Length: 155
Image 1 (spheres, one colour):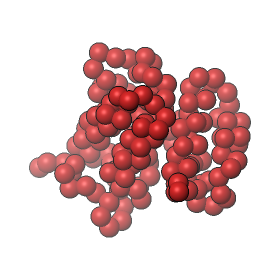
Image 2: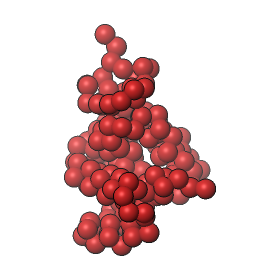
Image 3: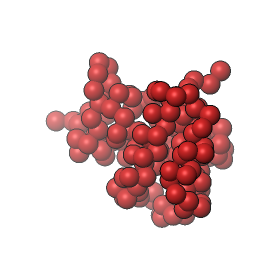
Image 4: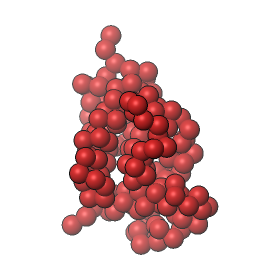
């Protein structure tokens, strides 16, 4: 059984992919693609993640680009690019979700929707990005147990 939050992430992946390929209006895409989500928390989570990703895509791509050796973000498989963008947006803007949970969820989506090499690829890029952002103090998680001590800034 798929959790409602995983289903929401799947729909965000679909919307990001559709936006990346078509450049259709984000509201049109989200209204159509998110229509099967339950009202309330799953729908709110999907809309926020989609909005956060698109609203910060320049900064997200800039961070990801630093860790794409010999590749430009525009040349990355569109599904992997959408997964990376969504994962980084969730790490940065979903304060209540542990970074480990986010990365694990993105890896599971990569296994299901992308190539055989994708899970390892997205894991490596997100992990490197997380270490950089944590070192810069940009990852702010609230609540008990939400900061992974292995990624805290070393003093």
